[in-house]
Image (cartoon, rainbow, N blue to C red; front, side, top):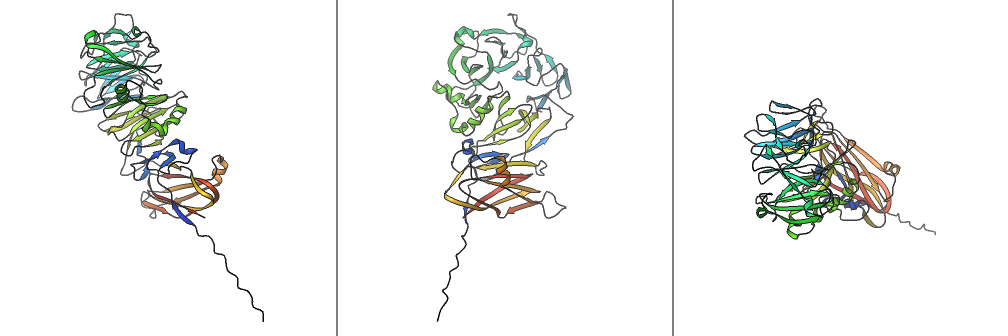
Length: 481
């Protein structure tokens, strides 16, 4: 009697879900081509993190298209802080108007309850809270005050200089908003080169005390620091130190961070407090390293740069602007994390704890968390590359995302550092979720589902694009076979 041999059915492999870390440590551009901690992202654009969660950046609110302003200058003396609006043909503030040309690149110094505005197109302008007047400064050297385009107030004295001019600055009397200016030549030091790009008041001990040193930044990357109160008195004005750094990217590339002053240069961010304390250059490497390579690439282009501290201190913004594109590198001190954003900003400014900007076209904008968001934001997150250990298949990915209003999520998995745009498009899956009630278009929605992938390799990167008015990524998992 013959008996059929029994056959054993092979079990289908079971997918094993692995958690993909959220990039709570922020952006690290090296992750584009290297396997580093999953807590870093190769790209993190229009997302922000507080070290715990990941959500879309703050909303932008743009003003009317017919209310164009080249530049806004805060005026915070008195009980009612307000902006001075600089337009192409006039300055305006609280009903006061001064007719003259402006170029949108003015600098401002605050002294004796006045704002001194210079741009090199005409004589300096002063605003006292009520009216605009020409600031009637004079020089005895033949240099026209109307050509001076830089200003700072240091120890209650106005200091002026001209970009691209001689290595010299001019200073006025204590509290002066008009009157004679005295020339101070820097070339007396012998080996100082270039021309003055900017100046800043800095502290020598990085504390919170009053600023007591004047730092002068040249176009060749030299920093000359003077201590004292009176440049005309050799007993009360002396050279403290000289440093050599990379050239500053912009005269607007300086910002105060706590008791420190940061300077944006072609090779990174310089800490003035650390540099002055050590007597040598001190880059903020521990902070700026994750984005320094990207800054170096963009520094080779012809662009406007600004380094800005948000009004509440919650963000340090490196702003890159050309007529074709704008980009921000944003550092959040609470999480020590970098991200990027695409606000259409040319110049940032603060007033009354509000962080605002003007666009390249002159529109006014501000950033905030709006209770009723209105901007549709497109945000991207590229994970760092992660190893599978051996050849494996990503069967699916499962993101968990909550959002307000309609939500669109594009998910792509890559297995090759050199994959083309066509490969990426072929490997992209799209999921769209709308609020259940048509009458509530801004209602809360949630995504928690498997998105089929079916891609085999030994190293992978997951790319996610989220489009919504507000969204938060709760978690991300990948199923491996």
